[in-house]
Length: 115
Image (tube, rainbow, N blue to C red; front, side, top):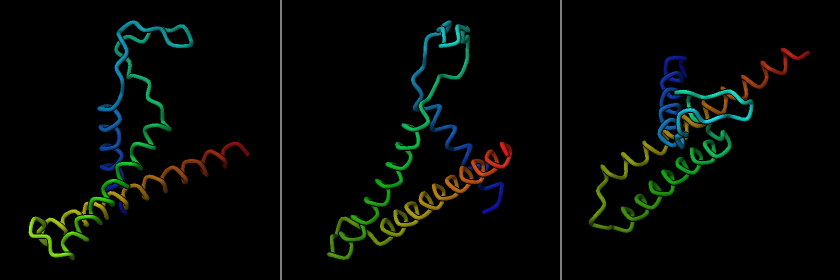
């Protein structure tokens, strides 16, 4: 995947992070005693990662359920809907894998620096 696509994915992740962040009141004092005026709210990385993985998992479950419904002959599910949801599922999984690969690369780079 090209750097441009990865940058787009990272931009989307940052946007989601900003949407899910709990805003702190201005002037809130952080643990170091500094005042955070207009600073980005603190987000727990672990919970954000779990939410992202859960969202990908939910997308895959929905695509699978819709595919199964179509195979059973459900009149409420069209082939177009099934294909679109399967593609969404595939794209979200690939994006998650690419983000994971970037994290692994960053970790390896940090480990090389400390030697």
